[in-house]
Amino acid sequence: MNRREFLEKAKNIAFGSTLLPIIGFSNSSIAEEEETLTPKDIFFPNENKVDIVKDVFLEKEYHNSFISVQKKLDYIQKYVGYGNFNIISFDEAINVLKYSKHGTVFTKDELAFIEHIFYYEPAYHGFYGERTTTNLTSSINIKDIEKVPYTGHYVFKGKPKETYLKLKKDIGPTIYLTSGVRSVVKQMRLFLDKLKSVDMNLSKASRSIAPPAFTYHSVGDFDVGKKGLGADNFTERFSFTSEFSQMKTLKYIDMRYTIGNKDGVRYEPWHVKVV
Image (cartoon, rainbow, N blue to C red; front, side, top):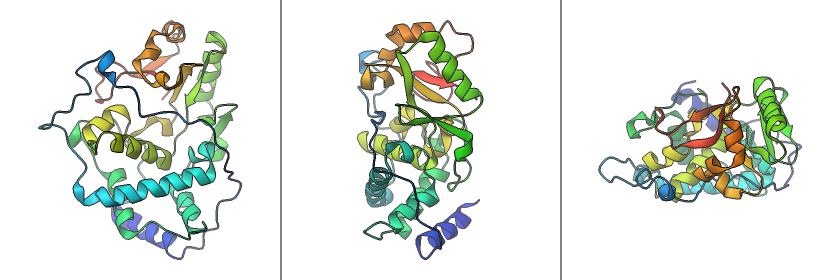
């Protein structure tokens, strides 16, 4: 789907679609993973420093739409619950707005911003990962995933699920799933939250979290952490845990983002590479 086709579809859905509202979603709140993290300066003093000359920032023309889209995504997440928000599609997100008590929609400018954030090529600001999703309106087949009890997260069936269960068996109950399957909408929410926390610095944001179309969480990868470590599971502190030490001895476990990786992403010892 090209950009023009997407905008036409988005407009049709937002303004007069016959799609039915989502059913089965609840307002249950499950603790969400924290992506706004402790600065890396503790272990890698120079890696997160902003270079005003080289770093690229979100264009000012998108700032107003950025703020309004972020607010609407926040509303959608609260409405459907954290667990369901992990796998919600863009069409379903539009329906949540359309059938809400406010009866709102994404405006033309907001749709243009959403399209821009999904379809742009981030190599120009230093992110070199591969595109994993080609269509903004792609959806996750519920038959392909399975919810992991007491986590609020899902894993894909097949190799991802088998890898996670084997990891749990070999390391024990102190390790758990901190983030699994992520839809385009979920990844966009995380990316925008990170972008806001770094003052619209696209270069810096993408070092911490992949842009919406580039996350391997949409095709099989997942994150793990140590119980009790909290938000530090998303920092280098996880690499100093006994759980990570045990992970390094397992031949079937590989890390997606090593130190100095070619994708331009920070070191993520918690991110398990599956695909």
